[in-house]
Image (tube, rainbow over all chains, first blue to last red; front, top):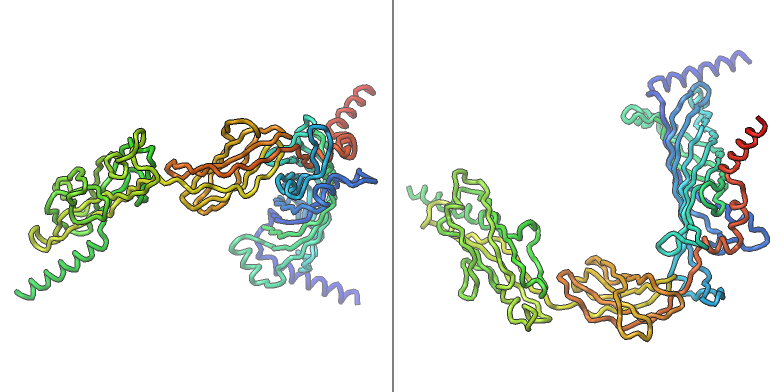
Amino acid sequence: MTRTFAALLALLAGAAQAEVSGASERRMFVEVKLGSYLPLVDRSFTGQVGPYQTVFQNAPMLMGELELDYEVFQKIGTLSFGLGAGYAEKYGRAKAVTNSSGVTTMLTEAQQQAQSTGIKVVPIKALAIYRFDWLLQTFDVPLVPFVKAGLVVMPWFITNGPSIEIAEGLRGEGVKLGFAGTLGLALCLDFLDKRLARDFDTSMGVNHTYLFGEVTLQEVFDVVATGPDFSSRHWMFGLGLEF
Amino acid sequence: MRWVVLLVSVVSTVAAAQVAQTQPFRVRAEGRDTDTSLSFGAAECGSTLTIRWTYQPLLQQQVCAAVQFWTTDGECADAAGTNDRRLDDVASFLFTGATATAPRTGTFTVSVSSLSGFQGGDAGTCGAPATTKRHRVCGAFKTSNTFCGQSEYTARADPLNLVYDAVPPARPVITALRVQDSALAAEVAFGSDDVVSLSAEVRKQGDASFRSGGSTTVSASDSSATVRVAGLENDTTYDVRVFASDAVGNTSEPSDVSAGTPIRMLGFFQVYRDAGGAGRGCAAAPSLAGLALGLWLLRRRRA
């Protein structure tokens, strides 16, 4: 029984190797992804309504991200190093005013529509990525789990009206530095049409096409200027091409 | 022999018809080859316009007379009328050359003040106020595809329209005056008379005179826009009025005055700091740079 199973496994592996033997060399991986990004600004404001909730009603930002990886190891899974850059912004309405007497009052509906305030963040990441694609390469199993870890540099900007907000003499902009860890699962789409996938490789050099989802834990700290906490736990979904 | 004459006649007639349909003879303002119409305001009466004529013959055309150029208040005809103003004539030899299809081109000038629309204004202006008048720069020459004197026809230049426009845009309307931090934003509706910009004037309520308060450009498809007046004092009431201007510098009557009071508005950063954000949460966390410096100092002390 064991022998039969081993022989079957060897046969499958051989067939799979033959299947991919004509494939072009794999060097790079590019990802384009979108996700919902909710910064943890309010997590330290326990027992009260936090500023993010006050201004943005705790609504998440839409974040877009582009990542490019270079593959350095392809024996058991694939190890890569990559760079990623993203962008997210969120706009809300000013909620309160202070008149010359120092009295803070709520704005009227019309006044609230008059001026917006916003957050813009630009997370830039240097990452090490491991994709366990041995099963895909060997047995044609289309699921590829992956893990990423790296450093994050995150410039941030807060606007009030058309310009950067200045509060108590401090400009609402700075840079955060931190780390990020990501777990994800990718579905290789080649099984949907193997002939088309092969043609895509032959004509464009794209070995595999993936749809993937990933969850990221991101902790960032102040480096330049003191600002809100833009750490997060967020999901992203996207399209990946290995070429 | 009759058949030959008839055939030549038919061919020349067809060729003439083709030339008439695709006449590559035109006049345009220098440097503005694609504009078939130019507008001028009353302030531009002293300007001189350089006109470039171009002629690209498609066939072996005989030029049978000097080429005429003129300006008219009406439509371009085969020759200048008695009320039209003759411009430079171009000798026929300039239109003929060693290479039959080689392009010919040249320039002449038109003094804008010589156009009738730019005359008859009051002292200090060169044209009648609040009027629009169209003029055309025309060109034509007698030509034949066989021999001059046989099957001659007139080739007209594709004309250039010159429009005197002293009609100001309609008064704009301030539909809303939004209160902002040290600013007021006027939402303005305006007519479709080629408005290219809106400008605002502002004064403290009670002051006699207005001062300039900002402007914005608009595109041809717009019918409303926002003009922001910045640099105002919060908690002070201001009067704002808006003017619309067209492409040739005509400015409308001012809109009705709207009043507003800028107030201090708190953006997210101020809300965050007012909530104590500056000294807690991420702000309270040690920065990585500070942490690295502390570790380095600690190692130096131990060493």
